Image 1 (tube, rainbow, N blue to C red):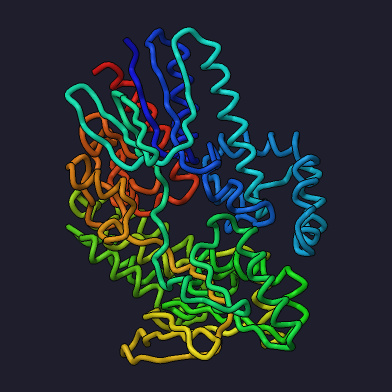
Image 2: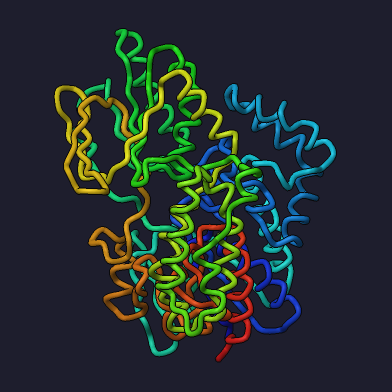
Length: 511
């Protein structure tokens, strides 16, 4: 009899669980059948680094921040040095910005200095896919491990006395003894019914990466072309100032059809600012985390006290015109040094209630994205709105944005947009629109939502219930090895937590 382990979702978290897990299994004689289930073609790379994200977008962070674990980063850099010529042949097929990136970074690539580069995301996708496939081949050559890829959508799980049955959307099913839920991030918030759009001179993009970023950019270009042909100006509304919003602007700006007319971008965000990318070293010398420093000698501090101090120090930085790129290090180190003094209950409270809120005030991005914003500002083609999205209406052959002021909730309206791109982020686990699989998991008490509302509660073995493991973004709002985690869409945290998960799974085989 063999242990049958099913991974629901075959992206980055599964990849970094599989590699060490297979390594352990190869040194053992335990019989294990691994089932890798994904509803897309993005096996091993996931959506962020696979086909849906395209081959011309860059990392939002430099490589040393993207993969902070030095041993993993060194391995990736060695692979880059060996494969860069072939990778660039694909990347160069992008627009003018791709060629600029190559020329700007040619010297660094030639001498293997990668740490400070914002490399194309698909480089990492190709790398991790190759690493996993190499490990899978080793597993298949062994006597004790079988591996099967299943491209289907899991919609329900039934718990048995000795395992589970996974039901798929095509009415087929699969029996297994253990499950790893590694389904990535939840779907976007639904803002507008695309069926209401009836004219070719308008476009609403609900998810930049669905079905693919390239197909959505093509739709936007078609609208630009039709409007340019009729000498109509196109105003593009990007909802959200996160990485997806920056990528949307970057990709569309790189299209000739955008540059042909007097077209504009407008970005709506709660803080009314774009991520920061410039470090002001002179001003930083005079900045101190005054409020966090006061807590260093305090006894019995709480999660709320740390969060309040962080926000006061961020307010102080803003009053000095110091952006996130300048202060993210000193402020993160400041509250990071205080977290170990919290008890477990307070640590979980910080992870669930405060971590992501602080993160939204510390958004940083690379100069490749922000230089595009700067150019658009100089050309008077970029505008920012500080507000909270309310709804979107279609009026008089244009989209009307209805939003409220964050300060006083006064409703405001702008009726002059022709392309709208939804980058406001994902729904939470308490939304009525969560996927059917999650509804069934919660209804059958296989898992429960933690107080973050974006993560699933797990025990010290990373199990939501017996033999039901969780990986990737759904681990947000938990303590892992006494470390509070509030954002699991960062590659470094995914690598770290997935390696721990591999160890937990291995130790619990046949138990």
